[in-house]
Length: 386
Image 1 (tube, rainbow, N blue to C red):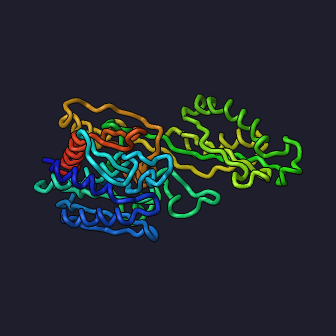
Image 2: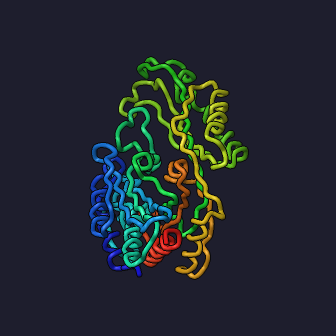
Image 3: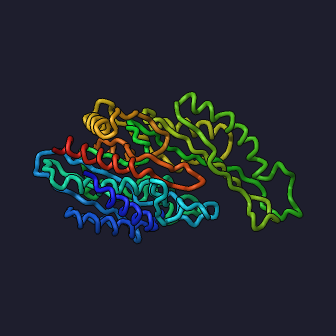
């Protein structure tokens, strides 16, 4: 049985620990304490100053496969962003309201981390042949260093799980508790980030050259060409393409014309399309515009066979707990399955109901759904490691 009261208490405690990307160590330490309380073997991985992974292992009796329950401790936001001020669910302070838990990171994905703890706690009397490994990792959020944006807070995109698997975190199977609305995600897209740049004269605006030598103005036909091309990318690759950012000039010194303007695209790549081919297609288009171009993120997608034993165990467990088979899905977002599958760890994303897109109240989770999801994790462990 899942200890509902303890699960809620753990969730509120976890959400109330700030753990923005680059500052995850306090949350990792909290998870390590919970692992020790459960009698797990604890491995601490110092990824860099202020950042750590922590792994807790419940040893099996031998001969069975190792099941990893993987979750990231970093949150998508810090809570200090001006546009999130006053939104309670985007603050590192947990609370309960009308059967839901609110707080920064509860959906993505501290709810899953505490559900793993509850699942292992529920397995106390079960004899399993395989190990159950709980991995709490740093640096998963989709972000990367570029230009002046340097430092640990920009090192995401599976930085923690990449360190995990190269420093002993090997397993046969893995569940990633990303917020999937209890759908079994068999595949997710990868990401390719592309920069396009135009250059122009850098002079005092009192002596500005003609507008056509302004890098922002030069970007206008490039932007038009991009808008025309985006649907073609989707049609030809099956992916998704979005304009993510544009930067040019100096708002604090508009008396100077911009020497350079950058346009950034997020190209989502289906798991069946090789990243090298996606890069070639993106650069072929960009170079045809006669502008400077750079691919600065290539994070492949991931997939698992629909008839894999882990999928079967997950779907059977879900049906026992929820009373109906789960839906299957392919998502456009990225997860650490990208790295784990490349180390031979068969990985499926399956997690809690979510209020992740709630911009009024912020991140929140239904408590009943979280409790049931924890029970599904425990049942899967019994099935694959028992």
